[in-house]
Image (cartoon, rainbow, N blue to C red):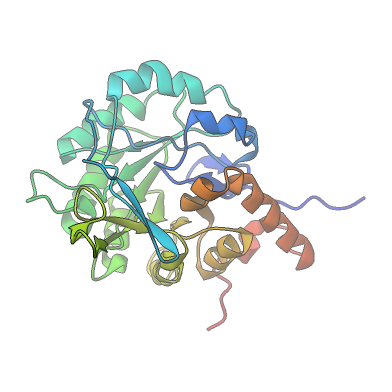
Length: 304
């Protein structure tokens, strides 16, 4: 009898059946037509805000070399609609449901985390601390170690579910922010959100997205994310969820070897709707070829 390869990973008290999940904002209910949601590691819907908001001006997406810039903004129907429709829609599946929260202040993060972090169908929270802090001159929460610590510490007091801090790459030292999130009570870290970027149409001389700047994602950012995953793993023992440029199983394996326990898939799903399950199968194939019995044995095994 052939031994079963173990692909389950843990985020605090939560166990995921495998290490592959969607990046928030790159996953919707309509994707069930292309892939079986029960086969992925977790479901992460688009970040939710307290109040409805329309998102940024169009155009919102443009293609770049080996990637794309998006400036969607946190388009949201608000917390009430999320509770009434989104949670029931996704909680019907057998895999963990992780809610991604975007807020305008620490108080708002705490308020929303209290509601969602104590909801019976929510298994974990991903706190999008990459979004602007409107009470802090518009700088992202995750650009300031002290703010990151305070935010995580206050949210930790209102819920017992695992907390994932989604870090921004737009900082001088991601290690400093990672340590602050860890000390504040995070159970895991997503490394990282998109990289601030800009593209110009040389004929019109106008920015190619309506908000002037947006977030760069796709294959172009993967080497940067691998570097940040490795650096983060040197300063914290928290599970790291690698995010940015995972287009196939080999990309995921590279992040895991660098120090990640799991990965998120975003841009790839726009190109190949089955990317999530394809990556899972390719990880499993890698484990077979290299006789790896437990995916956790591969984490942080880079030889330097």
